[in-house]
Image (cartoon, rainbow, N blue to C red; front, side, top):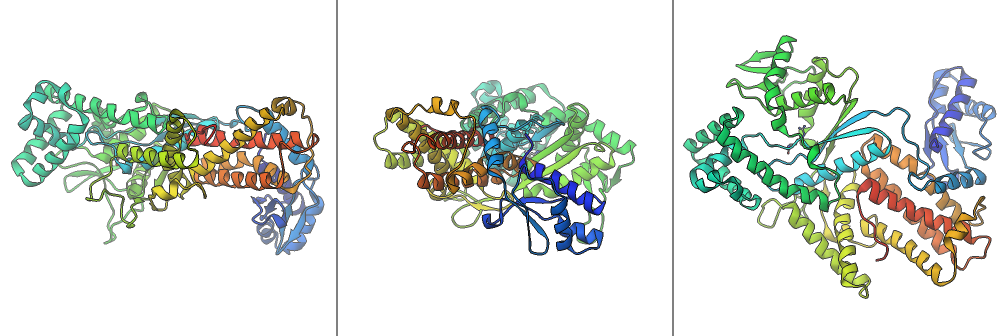
Length: 586
Ligand code: ARG
């Protein structure tokens, strides 16, 4: 089924074309104020400008030419030439029935033009524990993957882990020098130790030039695939994976080990990439280094900015690996679109990467997108750190979220069994951390606050989870009152609304497709959380205004349907698209 805005757009654009003889977009948006209807067409002003005519008069002609009475009531013209549209009751009712009849997809079609979309997200740096900085890329990227996949595209997840960097040189040098037993038996290394090793190695490397030199030599050995060095390296990578994979599972993140294609995968392709760039005359030597000078990038002095792909000592860089990865994704994975999810500090790197790839002639039919996000801040408004200024480990943070959620559950419903409490606390705690992140505009920095994200009021996970559980409790009560919900729902073949609140909720329910579409196109999970929050609030207003189980026999089936479909929509949004669990009671 086409989204309503698409239907309206088609009709109004056709009328604009018929009247002006020119194509001009109708620009349909949901009305800001319900007083003026449900949707509004904003395109008339631009069309009038093009046709050099008075916009209000043009709006009138368009309305006269418009064939839309199967969808809307008589359109109204407002202000300088807006067209206000109000859906007809029977259109709403029919649409609601179609959505309702589709158990899996709630009436939402898959795309007619499926694309191969590579999504690069999470990408922790190996040999260190994952910290809060990786949380955002991991969960935002995962939501995007889920949404784009739901639209029917072929999503290829890529976890571009940092497994080939200079950190390994320091680490291996330190292990060789101070922990020879680990070199003999790499299985003895554990991630918990690794973090400490890494800190120690970094400190030593900063203060001890001989050690720093040994560390650099180890990087060279690694990059030359020296057997002993490789054995230690491989163990470190395997050990790290054992640490981050359970975190993905805990977060309901869909990344699996076979989505991993780390920097090391591209190691043997780097020289070739640089050669290709040289051959094409795109990479040139500058101060001994091989550089691409992507068009439009300048430093403060106005000189062209280099995108360095090989240093004067022959070493390759982060940029080279990204060039190789992009070429691989386009040529080998057949990407039509590549989405990168990293923090905003890498914006320059990716713009230069995209421009360089364009110069190399790789991306004529490929869409590249860098999805950026801001910083997670502590109460003090500074980047989120432990009290002592250390980085916060993701596993500790999630454990604390679940622990705090346990108290919330305890307070709300002390009579549940311990097992139920534990299940709810897990869903609420992890859900709260994810939802708080999703519900912010991803480009903004935000203050990480357990109190705020665990609040039962406001646009939070527990509020949404409670909205779902509340509907489920209505359904449980129905059984006790001899109301046969599935029987009544099965008997519905047409609907009439008697209360405005019923209709308002119905109108929200038939807009879910639009919310997903907007969120997926712009890679903005907050569009989806806003929709879900609006839906939950529309449900609240409906439930306050309209008795359900006590309603008389003619009204009850419609109301039961509205309850059931609201629960299904919330559940779909939370579990399928945001990866947040729901619980049947709270
Ligand atoms: N490992 C990198 C970091 O932590 C992120 C990698 C993002 N992906 C990429 N293709 N560069 O900063």
